[in-house]
Image (cartoon, rainbow, N blue to C red; front, side, top):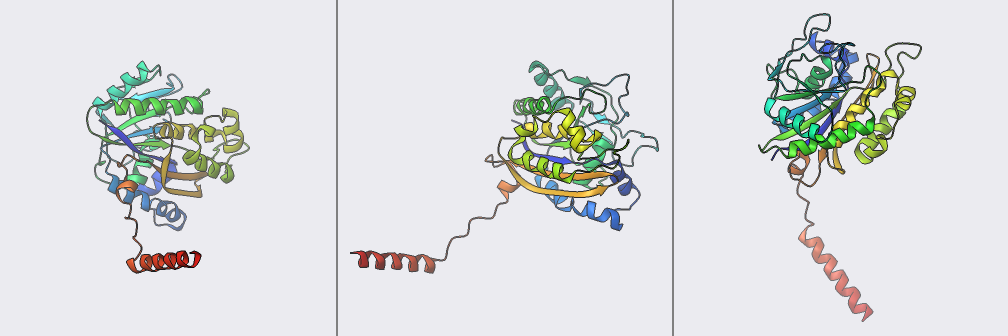
Length: 316
């Protein structure tokens, strides 16, 4: 059967994409951002997922205020990069996995999640920037991708709890797919930021780091955060972090935190990133690459045995 082996979160700041496209990644301002993803690219290259599910939000590229689905699942064979006002990004066309996507759609809809099935869709920086950060800039993306667009632009967005439970339903769907596939699921967007209004430029590192802590250890605590708290603590655009809860809901209750990175700012946003692997299934990179436990030298064991024997004689 197919299985979700790991989850990844990443901010999807459009300026990060511009820095990649304009060859500015080694400039002092950007180098600290991109250096934080070097280990992540190594991890992804070794994990070799067969499919990625990327949860992101569209920025008026595929949808507009005329039609804004709460959850939209891309079921097409391919998804071209969108023109976001300055031409499409110079990244590969995203190849889909229509069979698995259709299976997920059927499963979650029968589980009473109202998913919009999308058979033609362009994808913007919300999806392609995290792909760059985890896969680099290849000529072709190394695996098919299933996009899941979430409305976090027009009120009301879905609650954190609803997103977490959708993750649970996606996991069930993936595990009922008969083909043997290794799947990595992305949650993108955030962290704290506000791009307009009197609080433009707001960054709340304390809130962000607590969110990362609980994403690993106590995600159900995060499902209880109301919309108003996201806005107050993380800025108007901080609501994007509910998409991370879809990723987290698709994983085991207990996970292995493989890597974490956090820096501020990138453009006007706090950049957060984490990699979580499912435990105990022998399917993740960490479980397959743990060094064997070191055996204590035989001489040390003999000395301890002699000492214990001596103590027994004294007590006798």
